[in-house]
Length: 289
Image (cartoon, rainbow, N blue to C red; front, side):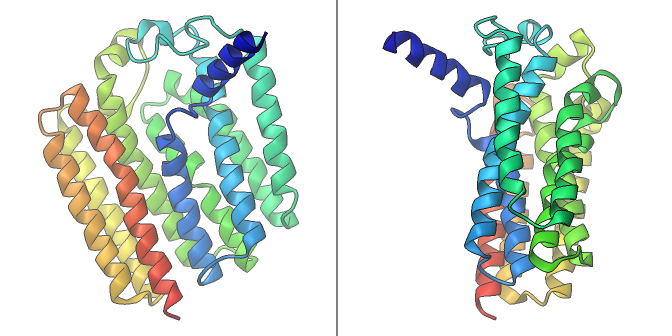
C-alpha cells in the first residue's frame, strides 16, 4: 500500500512540476520585485507568506490545467510524451480534482487580503484557466502567458499600497515582456514539433528573426526597468542589477546563437538568474531608505 501511495504522490509531483521549480521561480521573482517596491522594503510577513505560497499553488495548478488541455497533444512531442496525463498514468478526472483542490487552497490564501486584491485575483484565475486554449488559435501565446504570469504585480501593489501606481504598471509590462523572452527560448526547443502538430508559438511567429526580436524585447525590458529605477529613485545599486541582467541577456543570446534545443533550453533556464539579480538590486536599494 505504501509503495502504491508513493508512486501516486510521485505522479502528482510530476504533474505539478514540483521536480522542476524553474517555472515557479520565474513566476515568483516579479512577485517579489513588486512586493519589495510596493512595501518600500521588506513587506509584511503575512503578505509575503500569502504571495509566495499563492505563487507555488497557482503555478502547480497552471501546470495541471495546461497538461489537461494538451493531454492528446503532448504524446506527439518528444519532450512531453512522458508527462503523467500524456502517458495515461493519471486520469483526467484525477488531475482536475487536484487542480480544483489547489485552486481552493489558493483562494483561501487570497481571502486573507483586502477586497480589491481578491477581485484582481479573479482576473488571475481567468487568465490561468484560459491560457492553454491560446496555443490553438493565438499566434503569440507567450504574450498571454506573460499577462497571466505578470498579473501578480497589480495584486501586490494593491495589497501593499491600496492602488496600482505607474511603476506598478511598468513592472507589470516588463514582466510581460520578460515572459515573452524566456518562453520564446523555451518554445524554440519544441519549434519543429509545434509546427507539425499545429500549435502556435512566438518561436514560429518570429521565424528566422527570433534572436533579433528577443534581443529587441530584452532592450525594451531593460529600458522599462531603468525608468522604474529613476521614478522610484532606487539608486546606483539597483542600476548595477539592471546592468547585471543585461550581461545575462547577452550571455543568453550568445549561447542560443546556434539555435540547438540544448542551447535554447539553457538560455531559458538562465532567466532564473536575471530574476534573482534584479531582486537583489531592488532589495538592497529599498533597504537603504
